[in-house]
Length: 381
Image 1 (cartoon, one colour):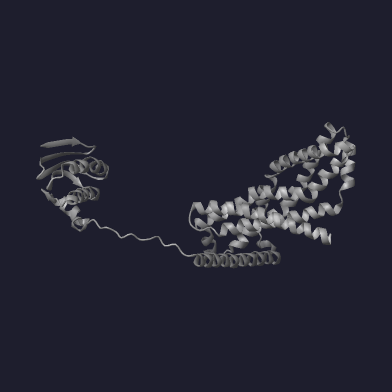
Image 2: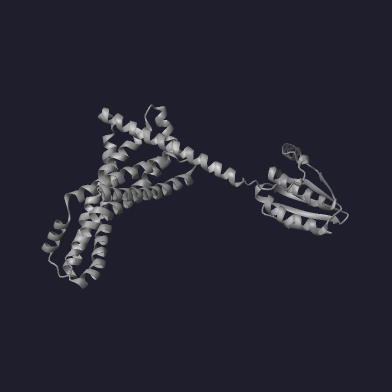
């Protein structure tokens, strides 16, 4: 009985009876044909179940380690029913390849079942505790490094990279102004519209101006601006420093004698601390403009009356307090963004994780610090 077929780069024929079969192979046994040979030939051998299988390699033009794996699979198949396996007409080059990959040493080994190790709850708690302790140590060290870098810059002003600082001011401030202005205008529009629905019932339309101006200047303006900056600039800082960490540019700075904190962090911190309060001021103005639109076109207020009520409501301390909060928010955003960037380990996935962590951590600290400011204003303001 005889069977034959053609594969992409090799042809085979099977001859003989069930007591002994001969497999004749022609062509190249390499990576391009190995997979097809196993899928086509092995099922045929299993169907026949010959007592012995002899593989003739006389017409094989090329044999590499993938071809040897085909022979290993054929031998493994025959030994399932205690059959015999042998090779014949093996050329010199084929012998070298077979010997190089230790064909005779390939054996099917039944690996014992190994239960996956899962540490108990105490071990997991201990590992988490040590992880957090390590993070806290790095956090304290980073704060100290930033403080010392600022101290050095104050004592040696020429060491500040002024060009980079101005560039970061442009990226974090000027480039962010359109989105801050748009969102603030819409926020003022929404606040004025929603408050007008209630105040109009009592004939207190004029107090829409007071509500919008006071809410934006004291609370919503600084918070909303800080969240926008955290999404734009905080994530960018983390991604920039994280990419430099992976590409070993941080190590290169160390090698050249530069302090990475002073070289990379200080310009970013100065840029955000100075630009976030300015963005907050624009946010307040555009939000008041949005409220003015509602007051004039929906509540029949005059623009002059709306502006006068806004000026009467606001105090200089309210504007100053919003500036102070915005400066602190900018410091937190820059600090967290740079910190997460320096903590990057591994590859590109770690950069993405650091970017996400920077934004989430910044927003959390913004809300937390704003709560503390509210308590301070309530009891000491």
